Image (cartoon, rainbow, N blue to C red):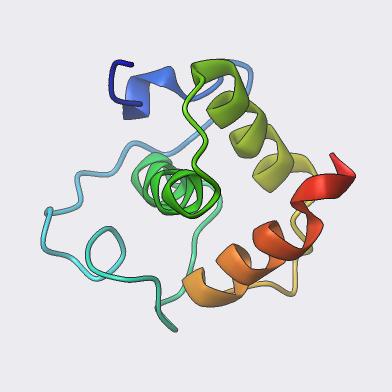
Length: 95
């Protein structure tokens, strides 16, 4: 399987495309209490990549589905990376 790239995120969702350095806490290391911006492409891509490793997801269409779930279903009160990842893990089977 080809790696899932930022450009593979759904076109129907408008993302900010801010250049974030690869060593920035928002897109590197393990998810933590770093604020999560669901409108930032790099941050959403990072979270999807981490989630896909945990759940062993490989199909591009499944990873696009994760992006759509983050966009449409992730509660507004979820504001950190770790909480967003926990929410996805808990609710994944509902989708």
